[in-house]
Structures are given as structure tokens and as C-alpha cells.
Length: 300
Image 1 (cartoon, rainbow, N blue to C red):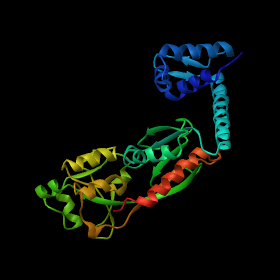
Image 2: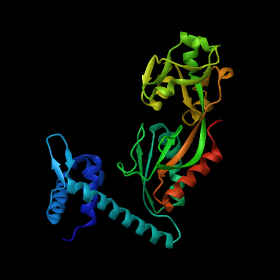
Image 3: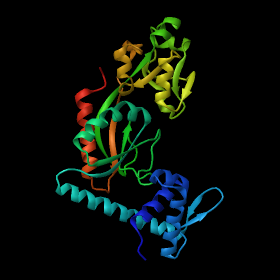
Image 4: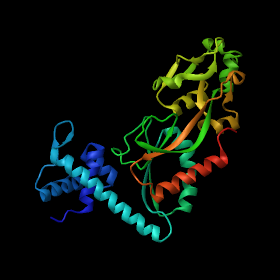
């Protein structure tokens, strides 16, 4: 039969990305090569793994069964590579990391050079997802999540916290005035999230002592978009310190209503599947990130 590892990885990529074209892009090969690889695999197995419709690819029952074994095979090869690297005394292999775009841009990316210098044998893949993802489906080793965790099937390692505060640009405040009390927000343009709506509950207490939930004048699903809107003077925003430390230090965003802020620290966790032993490469990255965050912080 002589099935190759490349054929197995190609099949998994087609399933995970949803198309042969996307799989080819992920694997950095031509679409025709990815298509031929899938055809060879089905020919060797003497079965159809995927049904091709006009809109999408669907796994057959045989494909479902083979996918589970295929993932086990790839994981076993990666573990073997890692064990050999461990014999040399350093982590190695591919590490797939997922985080929301703002955390990836403002926290992870600036630390990559230092991590690569310390662990040159780890091959990094960085992916950004604004919402929670299925780690297995997206072939993700570790996800960095901000806020309270809900999924009990995941193991979580805390790597830090980040304060949330209200901010605006000096240009916006010069045009519209600085709010002095929480009720003044009604007179201002407010920048908030389209989803999840829970992020529009700001760490401010109204006259009745209740947490303020704002109705955005301008909404976005992306915290980074809201940050840019605030920098351009479009309104008042409430964001986590990890996104805005540089802006606050430069004076391009300044705190508002500081006396009325009820401290809110968002937990930051690295998560991975509870039934998977943490690998050396995951441990090396998470430990490096936690140490860096602990050393530098976000609150300055």
C-alpha cells in the first residue's frame, strides 16, 4: 500500500481547511499536486474518503474513520521528533499558536524574536481568531485566551492579567470635552463591540452603583479596529491595557473617568487539551510568554 506521511498530511489539510485549494496554500504546493495526492491516497486505500459537491467537500464514513487514525499518526511522528530533540536537550517541532488579533499583534509578535533566539528548533505557526476555536479541528497546539474560560475540557495555565480602562484621543477630547461623571457618556460617541455584547459592559459604576453597559455609536467585532478608531478621534473606547500601553505612554490615548473606574483585570490563559500531555515545545513557549508578561506588565 505504501501510504506516505505527505499524503496523510495533505488529506488532513484538505479536511481542516475545507478545500483542496486552501490545503495547497497551507502546504505551499500547487492545487494540482494536492489533488493528485488525495487521489493517490484514495486509490491506495481503495475507498472514497471525501465526497465532492459543488459547494464543499464532505467526509464519508470511511473518511471519518481514517481521519481519526491519520491525526494519531501525525501526532505520533511529531512526538517522536520531539523526543529525539529532547535527547539533544532542547524543544523542537512545529508549534501552532492561536490568539485574538490584538493580543497576537501587541504581545506575541514582539516576543517572537527573543523566543526564536532561545529555541531555534521550534517551528512556529501563528493564527488569529477573534472567537473561541476548536483546537483539534484547527490543528492548534495552544490558544491564548483573554477573559473567563468556559470549556472544562481544556487545561489552562495562567500567564498574566490585564487591566481594562476607558480611553480617548486628545483630539477627540479637545473637540467634545472631557466627561467628568459617568452620566456624561450620554453626550459622547462610544466605540464598542458588535460581539460579544458582554464586552460592552464597561468597568464604570453609574449613580445607582450598577456596572455601565454602553450602546456603541460605532461598533466592531475587532478590538484592534476599535483602537484605531479611538486613535483617529472617533470616540471613547474601553480596552485592555495590553493593547494600549504604547498609546498611553505616547499620549495618543489618555484615560478618562479614571476616578470612576471599578478595577477590572482580565485573566490571560494559555489553553490546550486536558487529555494531551504538555509537550516540551508548548511548555517552552508558555513559560517564556508568562515570564515576559510578568517582567514587563501592561499597566504602565
